[in-house]
Length: 550
Image 1 (cartoon, rainbow, N blue to C red):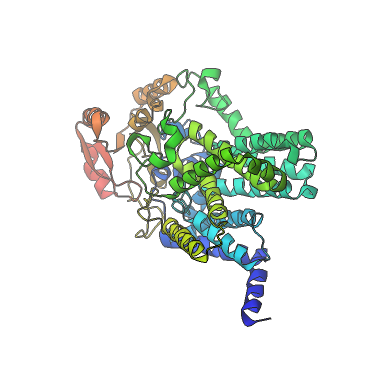
Image 2: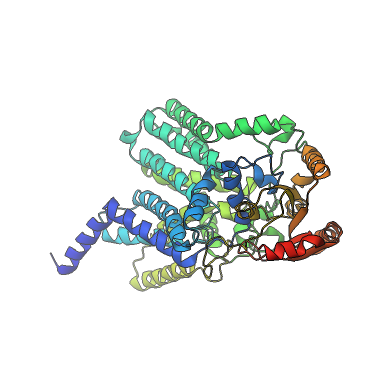
C-alpha cells in the first residue's frame, strides 16, 4: 500500500467518524457566527426580543399590539437568545458562538443526508460530500442567517434531522418501524409549532410519503403514525399558545384564519403575507427573476446565482427525461432514495412558491439544491479525456462562484462593531408614563426601558403592515377601542417613540400624523443599535427631566 493510499484510508476513516465530523462542524458554525455577527435585524427590533420579554413578564394584552401581527407569535423559540442577552450582553462573541451551534448542527444533519447519496468508503465520494456541504453552507438563505435571530436555521435543523431519518428508512427498508415514523412526524410537528414558516416542509414530507407509498413496508400504518407524530408535536409545543389565543382573542390561530373564527380583534379575513408571490407565468421562471423589482423574494435585493443554476439543471433534466422515460422507471426501481428526494424537493418548492415565496424561508431546499447540483454535474464521463477535463474545470469554476457568493446581500445586517449585543441609552421616564410606539420596528425598546421604568405601551400606525398587503393591527377592531379607552383614561405624561418613515405616499401620510401627534413635544434621536431612525418625543416641560435623568 502506497503512502497516498494510506492517507486516503485514514481520511476515509476520519470522515466516517460522526463525532469528529460533528465537532468540526459545530466549531465551524460557532467560528463563522462570531466572525460575521449577522443580526442587525428588523424582525429582532420588531418582535424577537420583545416577545420573549412579554411572555416572561406577562405583558401580552397589557402592551397593546406593539409589534403588529408578530405580537401574537409563539415566543418559545425566542427565549434562548433572550436569556443569552440577559446574561452575556457585554460579551457578544459568547452569544454568537452559542447561536452558531445551530448552524453547525444543521450542517451535520445535512452531512448525514449527503452520506446516504455517496459511497463513504471512497475517497472521491467523501470529497464530493464535503464540497456539497460547503456549497450548501454558503447559500444566501443559509449563510446570511447563521447566528441571527430569524430562527430559520434552527427550523431547518429540525427539518433536515427529520428528513435524514426518512431518507434513511427509504434507502434501508429494514430500518423502517412504527417508532421512527412517529419520531419523524414528531420532530416536524415541534418545528411547525415553534415557527409556521416550516409548513411547506411538513406538507411536502407527508405528500412525498403518500406518492412513494410503495417504498414503505406498511404504508398506511407508517404514514398514519407520521401524521399522528406531527399532530402530537405541534400540540405539545403550540397547544398551550393556541389556548391562550382562544382565551384572549377567540381565535386559536389568531390573527390567522380569522375568516373562520371571526375574532372581533381583527378584520374578517385570513391574513397572509403575499408580498412576493409572483403571478403566472412569472412564477414558472421565478429563480431567474427573483432578484428583480416586483418579482423579488426578499425585503432587500440580493445576488446569488445558485437558484438559477439549480433551476436550469432541473429544467434540463426534465427535458432529458421526457425523451428518456425509461430513466424514471430505472430510478424508481434502483435508486428509490434519490427518487423520493426529487419528489420531495419539487413538492416543497411548489408549496413554498405559492404560500410564501420568501427566500429566507427556503433554507432546506437551497441546501438540497447543492446535493442535486453535485450529483448531477459530477456524473459526466467521456472517452476523450480532454473533453472530460474541460467539463470538470468548468464544474469546479461554477462551484467556486457559488461558494464565493459574490455580491450577496447581508439581509440581517451585522453587529461587528458593537460592544454589546443590545445597546440603548438609559432613559428615565416620569412615573405613570404612557408609552406610544408609532410605526414598527420599535417594540425592542420596551424590554430596555422596563429595566428602570414602569409603563404601559400602545402600538400606533404600523404602516409597514399596509405595505405588506395586510391590515394595520393597531388600528383595527377591538384593539383600537381598547387603546382609545386607555389613552382617554390616562392622567399622566405621554412619551412617543417612533421609527421615521419618509418614502412614498405612506411616508408623507405618516409624517403628517407624527407631526400632528408630537406637536408641542421635544423630539430627538434615540441612541441604540436596534434601528438608527428611532426618535423619542416627550412633553416640552419634561425635556430637562429626560436629559438630566438619562
